Image 1: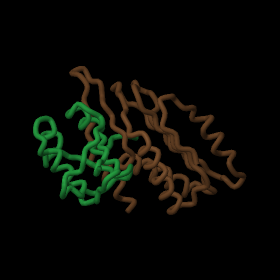
Image 2: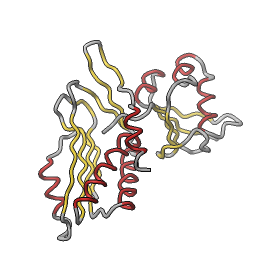
Image 3: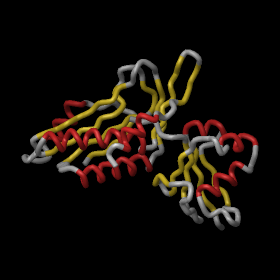
Image 4: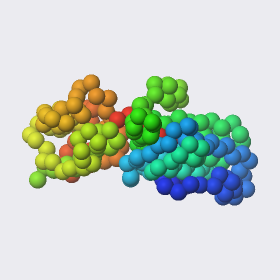
Length: 142
Length: 86
């Protein structure tokens, strides 16, 4: 398992290739990349807790699906439109487990990992408010 | 000494103008909710940042917790708005 919270960008191809090589039994890798949409932003996080929260989410996914390995990378700091924010890639024997675990990890990241987005709009900077839709997306797994 | 370390993030940090502080736990303050009330009672920026209507989340020792969660000397307690990563 690889969990990284970093300022730097990541390379989707290289990450998926590394993940795919972890075992010859891997038959599926599902990946999700989240991007900055339209507005420049700054992402703040809680160092220490962030890594811990992501590791807990991954552990929960492993308890529900057959997850052979996974990579989660989340960026922080200043980001501009089209920049990559987050990568979740899950390796499994078959696609069903890989798709489900990838979506689950992403939904839980949105509601449980301590990140906060501050958008730079024309009128100034404003903190993004949490969306009820994100809570609902996470709740459907319970 | 019955000290706890308190961390503030995002809008909470900006509203009170600091990212961390260490305080001595007042007698009778044994939960996250009680600590929140204590901070609100300081008045000024704390009063609005910790107002009852303010939507806040808390973590104790880096685990997200409910308001009724216990706190004790030596704990790291954090207050922040609902998260918006991903």
